[in-house]
Amino acid sequence: MSPEVPASAESRVMRVGSPRSPGLSTGTVVLLAIVLVGGRVVLDLTLGPDGAEPWQRLVEVLTAAMTIAVALHFSPGDPPRRPWSVLAIAMAVLPAVRLLSYFQIKAGDIAAAHVLLILGNFAMAYAVFGFGRVLGSSELLSDRTAEDRVRATTFVSLLAVGALAMLAFPTLELALRGMPATAGAWIAASTTIVSTLCDALVFAGGTYLVWLVRPLLGGSLARPYLLIAVGGGAFLVVDMLLVTAGATTQTELLGSDMRNLLTRWLGCLAFTGFALAAATQFALLRSARRR
Image (cartoon, rainbow, N blue to C red; front, side, top):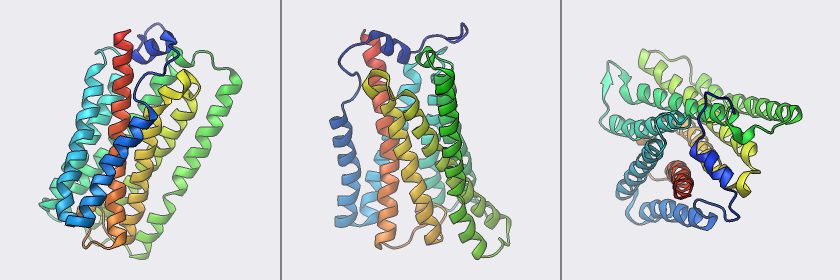
């Protein structure tokens, strides 16, 4: 570990070496996911999308609150505090996008929701890269050999290629619709491309982090990153479904056909993934503090 990087709570958990895995159990995580996503599904099928929206807002607020709690739980000089703070900002921005989209707030013909969504997606991707930098400079991975680093580089390269390949579908769909005619249309098209790219990077980056720390503490340290990858992957599928619906945000979806319902349910799953990632990280930190 480099001398300028202080030991994080994650490092302290690693050094404890307890035979019992800290943090939330797999069963607890699965149960919470079923409750949060299942609640949205049940409300959609019984009350319709309008009746399910308050539940969705609750999940989004919970996600923002949990990521903020994790960021604040780290000490000011602890390296993981920065990426968790950036992720908290991204999770707080995304619900604001829905609000701006619902009220159709615009500057000329440029939707404020689209601009904010671009910023939120960049913040989310930046946070995942931040996690990678923190782990790369910490003592958790200090025993890696040159062969380990080559495998890591190869793995990252393959994920990056896959992430870029995911752009082909929305780019082709947008190209088939013709060139945007106004500034607002250009921003909307850019929002779709940026959202797809960033969600692909979050999914790929989260998967890489899981692979990187999977041997530590029986996989407990990898669980938050696994859930981040799940959230990013769900958002990525949402992007694809929104493109087929000709929409940029979920608020723009009209009707309650199966495609739109699936888009909303996957959106709920995405936020749930990030909420549970934060909850799992928070439990790891609490475990380290108690020791």
